[in-house]
Image: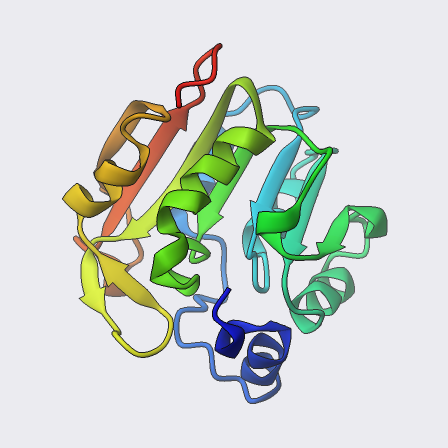
Length: 201
């Protein structure tokens, strides 16, 4: 891991309110996906969640098994203050890439992939595969835009991302989001990737 992107780096961003990617609300494409889920007992992980408006939305809508992982402590504290009904033991302050002995039915991507060092992108999808139950899904949004070169958020292209996961996941949906928040219209890819019953790599 690039040491400049450590826990202190992220805590400092939250202390200084330097988080331009933070929408202050649940992302509309993710909200639409959550609203069509019927099983509210599935295990859900939101890694690198930041202020985790998606976790807050899920918990407030009756999902009982929501986990949040973040490198930094402040966003987890913020979430607990806003959403005290979330289980404190489900707030995991740890390095996503070192998570072990946990499996999930659904993992939600929301501005985590664009925050990690570019060298970890292939490993990101491999770790997602490892943490999912068979037939589990990785859903979420990726920036289809160049963005920054020297600091998060880092961008990329649809073709680049597909190269990382094509041998690992079965894409159910992988296309430009149709219902993005206005500043992100045309710049977000919605992905719904399913883990096969067998290990694909």
